[in-house]
Length: 110
Image (tube, rainbow, N blue to C red):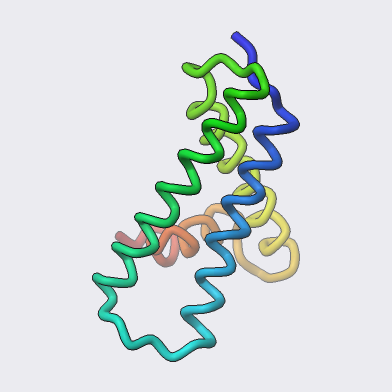
């Protein structure tokens, strides 16, 4: 089982930057579409980019069955690094930061 970690990391970073760019656009550009339309468009764009990433990672010699689990682990690792960094800069616990990013609010809240 092999995954080219260099290409995988490049693609995960590219996808994360794409999502961050779209989030910033939502915050700074007035939107005329409904939230449902925005979500559907973002999902379609991300799905297309995810497919391109998968193809690039596979083309680098990675075993296809290992790509998606490796991408999930890489993205979870990036999230934990971000949350740890935010936690160190504030008085919030790392798990609390992750939950707030995930939309679950404070610790112990649904």
